[in-house]
Length: 176
Image 1: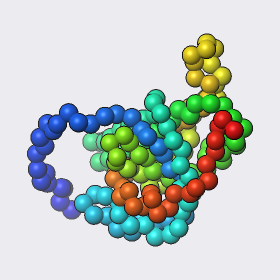
Image 2: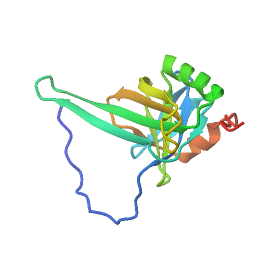
Image 3: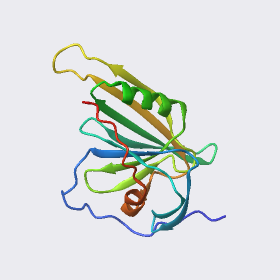
């Protein structure tokens, strides 16, 4: 099999991008299948997953590490999602217990209006986190979670229509 060939270069681009994540949407592993990709973007899925939305603000990120071995001739991608959920509450803690014992597929929305998917084929795993009260008045009182997905490709871009068609209205209000 022949190796791939480069197809283009890349301009520097404008300075109109921002960092940070706006929301994540959790789907149960096995509730849907990716069916159509157009130019590297997932545009159609089969199945009827419920996507449970968690709103974010600050200190959450998605990072993908390229793992390539010359000796073994392998390349895979470790997708690491770090989430900070302020405010401790019982309902969220119960949901975190479920997330930690399952392999959810996670759709990620950034502040540039782009959507990605973590663990599309293999699911993602909670690999760590904290439930913290903080020590000083200005410290975090909430949850931190780290999810890791290992895939043969980086997180695919996702059409917004997949999110809007499947998002559940069920949400926790931690202040209730």
